[in-house]
Length: 44
Image (cartoon, rainbow, N blue to C red; front, side, top):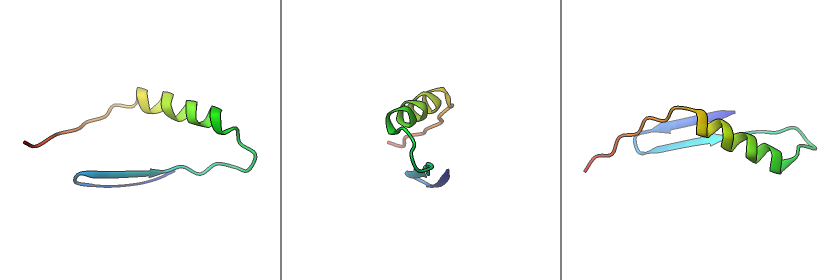
């Protein structure tokens, strides 16, 4: 996993081994991102 962030933008790249199950990987990523604390601030 590689991530880059700056003000107003974040990018995360995930790499998987050949032969992985993409549906299972997507579900795992969704579950883990839901459990991860996310701090955001919006300026008006």
